[in-house]
Length: 302
Image (tube, rainbow, N blue to C red; front, side, top):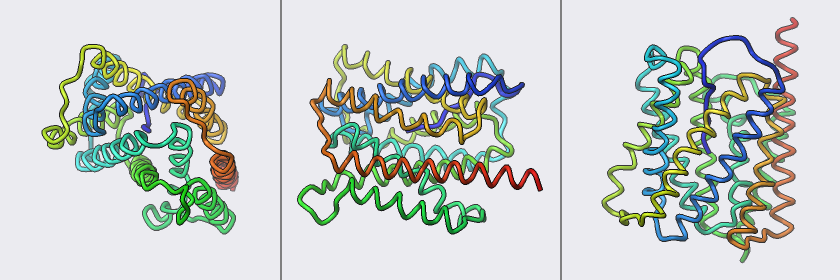
């Protein structure tokens, strides 16, 4: 659950094909990270410790991006915004990993797909963007899909799913902040400061949850951080090289990977209502993305 960036800060777009390739790789890598985080949770590590190592070792690929783009890419006009964004990313990943420990992998990922719907719902009051009746209808449909997955008030309801829903809300707020920061901040700066800031934010909690990691577990933590950083890089690179309306449908390939990984590693078998809710959430998210792309094209043409 993180956004990434390309390896360079500027230059010409190299085509839609490259963007699609980047998003497919990003989603695959981040799905593996989700599976590793769930496995570590089952091994006895709490979410705060997993988040700490995710971001600590995530600094390794970040260092490579800084080396490639140069120190000027770290210049910032909005340092306090970076602090807030790091806090939101820390909250998003901590609550996601906490809920992921108890939920089937595909079900948890399905709930996170409400993040773009939260973005649309909050873009009006927070960014002053106009949201029309059609997109509000899609927002309501998306949340109806979320209710099908969550099933509040029934025996199938799992309180841990609210942690993942809270994670989606934190991530949506981080994405809205990213929209605003993108006017002045480089991609490298946003990834570097959010990675470092989230790692530091987890430090105060480690004293309450710390478990000395076994040697083989430490290798999993290392892989989690490196693959997470690389996956984040590929994701923003994808959105740089191709329009969001083209890239967004490939986000939902996470359901394929997490469904397979959950079945192979944890014997997860989400029921039919989870898949129904997932289909509704995905359809609403895709409609919102397409509608926003259409409105942007009309605005540029006028």
